[in-house]
Length: 289
Ligand SMILES: Cc1cc2nc3c(=O)[nH]c(=O)nc-3n(C[C@H](O)[C@H](O)[C@H](O)COP(=O)(O)OP(=O)(O)OC[C@H]3O[C@@H](n4cnc5c(N)ncnc54)[C@H](O)[C@@H]3O)c2cc1C
Image (cartoon, rainbow, N blue to C red; front, side, top):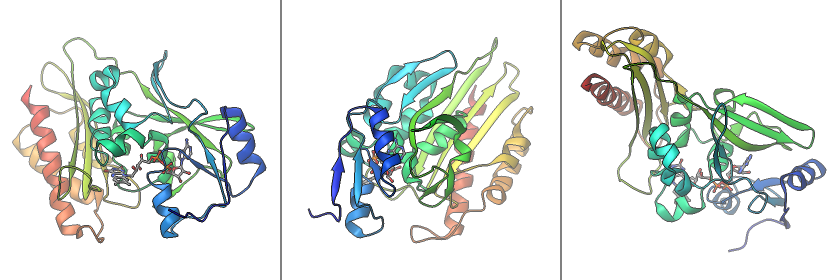
């Protein structure tokens, strides 16, 4: 396949990659290439020079004092299979396992899913409910940003052209006595695999022994120009015991909260129904006890 690129640079360290990006304005990083190669071929993105991140050591998952740190170069397959992600951040493990199908999951990276900034990026709602923060580096140093502040619109981030996402921090959850954590990711589309979400949702709730919802976070993808939190719905549910009337009210509020859009994949009316249905299923899990 011919791609409109002049040069592919293959740095052997993060420092070298950052130096190359600083020296060559217009150079673009490439990780698994599952988004970028298609976009270059179709003329939707342009880059004369690609900086290949394969050998710069951004893959891997480790524990830190603040939580689990996932390197930007970690594949979806590795995330979905990791015991710590599966047990502590099950929504993310489920989301990674729903990106494309297994061959794509073996190449697609977390950094690429974020860097591509699709409103339908499946990992983002799961990361939002986990309260994730991204570590960003340039040749001048590092900074950390709440994930919610990364996205500027469809296909656009607030990254500067010479910056890279290095890793994503998932803060540890401290569950008090008798509390339980409910976390889910669900995706709606016409097939099980190899499908861009028509709507996807991640939910996290911490429920006390008396049934009170102490914390709830709800995030939706593919409903707006960027993935979104349903904050008014969260406020409605928090510090309350879920009963039939609260559940009913939440299903109405979430549709106004998220205000789904029309696009080629589905009309807004379908998305409103899907958003309410996904929330209803999540609240059924929360109520199950
Ligand atoms: C058949 C198919 C099915 C797919 N299905 C899904 C799906 O179901 N759900 C879903 O969410 N996505 C899906 N995708 C999209 C894609 O696989 C994911 O978004 C993937 O995570 C991209 O990762 P990558 O490593 O391939 O990124 P690349 O294509 O290498 O890069 C994507 C973008 O991110 C930038 N980038 C890469 N790494 C970094 C970094 N460390 N720092 C800053 N910027 C960076 C690149 O410059 C580029 O702009 C699918 C793609 C294909 C081809």
